[in-house]
Length: 261
Length: 261
DNA sequence: CGTCCATTTGAGAGAGTTCAACCATTGTGG
DNA sequence: CCACAATGGTTGAACTCTCTCAAATGGACG
Image 1 (cartoon, each protein chain N blue to C red):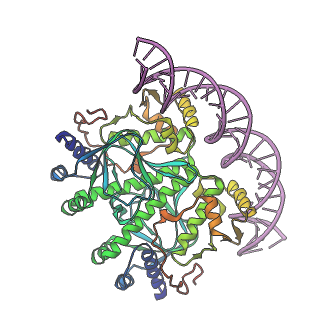
Image 2: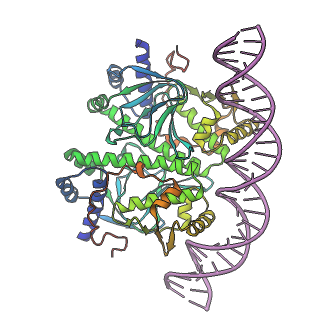
Image 3: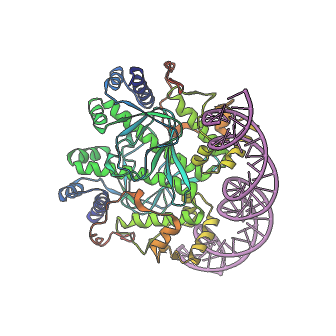
């Protein structure tokens, strides 16, 4: 595994954690120094881990998008969370014996599996990292709650708009978006699975959103001409993401995009 | 505060944790010995804690039902979790500064607030208790995920049936239900808020469920003539609750019901 | 150039909502 | 003890959002 890839993984993790909690230079160095294991690759549309599998290590998504999803016996599928670069999955789920849901890739994904041992050691030696991990977990739960509200109460247009707002903010944490939009390498069917709607209705609603100039779609990217307008139309408020107020953001280091070699 | 009340709180907690993870006699004694703080009472229909409030201690619901809910600016409300006796809320959320949602009582509720210090001390001295707390948190997240599936994919009848199955199983953990039903001291509007439906539609759907002999409703109690039938009609499978296989269940100690003086 | 996959559009059906009225139960004050 | 208000449950009719099924369009790629 090439060296730059590893740095990529450490950087994406450090950036994420730093945005949720305060980390010092030495914390960041510890993250970089920790042997995160090798980066693995997986094709689009395959399962990283499947319902019923024994729980494994913690996953860190380095690049690409994945979905946490559940299926009903009759084939209905619901995505319960979208996993983006920098996301850390299943922290501490080693206490449960088997997965009650699956994680599948939506695009090609690069990821590392971090053993619970490494997580534990980092947590013990670097209390700020431990806190950051806790906060990341609590924020994840908070997002999960917001999704219940999204699907339970919002109209189709609001749901999709809310999802786009959330994705835009979350992707900004790792330098993959700015307030005017982001690349969205997934299909309308994927959006449908996440929003609890059909792909046909997603399509019609996107058309409506374009007509209202809330979004502009062009080759797998979402442009948001007026973020506040979209947020208002979607009843989006970012409090549930529990971000610290933005520091003077350091520009994204080169090569952190989805298009790296 | 009378002595029996305190024992009630310790028992309800011990029972819950023991059902999720293995606890020894000494663990249980530690729980009983720990000063859990005094039991407080709150009327029905009031907020235990509100969105925007600074985070407080961990809540343990001793008796009564409460709801974790979020409201949209225009008044739409979604219940994202139902809190039952024995439920422990907001473990470790001291890492977040303020609540992004509210917790309101549906019935009169008795609860204790446990300081994070006590939780920490118990966790440190009794590793099995620490594990049990972890598992309780992970199970809570798992339920949250299942609710997304419930609201996103299931029909009205399936949603309500699934909710009833979940409540029945969860209430059995603290001796407040058996497979043939449970007391449900909440209104159809409360069910509507949790299911993401209107109370009118809840009413019509309950009627349909009665017609299909899936449930029998009589003065605020749900009788389930055939649990498996209801589970099948609702696509309910209990795996997501992450319960250990039932031990030879000790009968509920007297006075643990909702009707205690 | 044909295949495959995602997007787009149409028409009709259905699940759930809205609004409004009515009923039943319970608690309360005179 | 009764009248009355208050709350929650029940029902009807019209409406609307979203789904289903089906077919057409379009782009990417071998």
